[in-house]
Image (cartoon, rainbow, N blue to C red; front, top):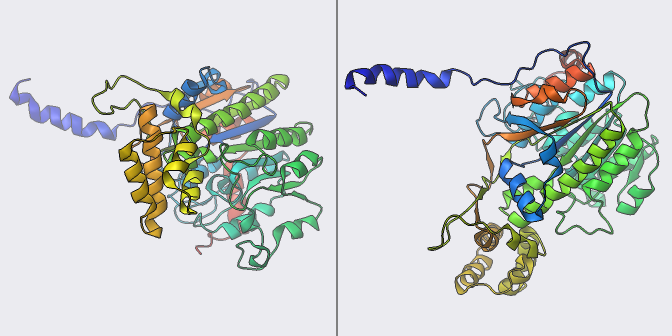
Length: 466
């Protein structure tokens, strides 16, 4: 290129980022278009494209997700290119961007109407199912309006004010007072309070199986439902079992329903850079999706939409180890893992021999001398550093053998997959902002998010900040 052309060329390049990329249209719904009566919105928290690929490779077969892939979603928040779950959950719940750490409010702290609230106003039944704590960021964004995601006691209180027919998830500590082993500072025992109002409350898998009516509140695990690799199947239900119960209770209602289903522990496995647990959580979510799709095929008026709130971990599939070719990948090595890296670290921190426990937990068996040295050094680290050091060492053991890598223990700005099945599916094709997804759902269900926001702002002031 002639030097005389450089300034003009550089000026053009400098202007390119200012032009927004072409995205899929989110035009109003055509009145003659088939509309759903019910919507099931599924969020595999933290699940990026590489996690889906890893799960497919580990299981050796196509996933249910593969059959309904229609597009992709951009996930940034209003104050960062890398979102947290509070801002991304709020975007999916309200159709509006907000700052990281904020729940159900705009950046100025004003409440935003959510899909779940608008569905209730329109007379639909509603449900919320998650393996995370019910008060965690994503479910909270659909049911609460607070300035900070850490306000989980307040989130639980607000969540109960809606009259949601089915609430199933983890984290009973924010529902019960300290005198009963919980974390609430106000002394309230929310499960006892709602029982007096006719809500069925269950704490175990067996009690959930026996539940037969709404309203239903299920709280499983002090903080969340355990990872699939560690879950006590006698006490804690799977995401599939919770979703099946929600569909059983909501599916026969004549008014239709809005159901949110979150695979919340995918994110945690990715935060820990735990490839075996991550693949297992994605596969567990995919089994739930298969159930939901079967339900939707029996009822042609059900729309299923699935999209992650963000990617976590920066997972890369393919990694050079030593002088080996970089063009190798061994996902099958993850099949031998017997526990999550978090649970394995727990055992080591409790005093078990780090080398023996790591060999069993990862399924590797015999560790290299270098791995043994790193593990013992991590176990001997100061208390405040030991868990992170152990997770890093254990992740290295599994990840190197599988030939996968990680860029972070946090979130990334990677676009995530968008999946849809049922009436209106074609409207989700292409690349969308995360705020487009709820706007499309609202349009297809005939919900008015702006009116819901106006109603909320008449009823309440700005969100509490502490």
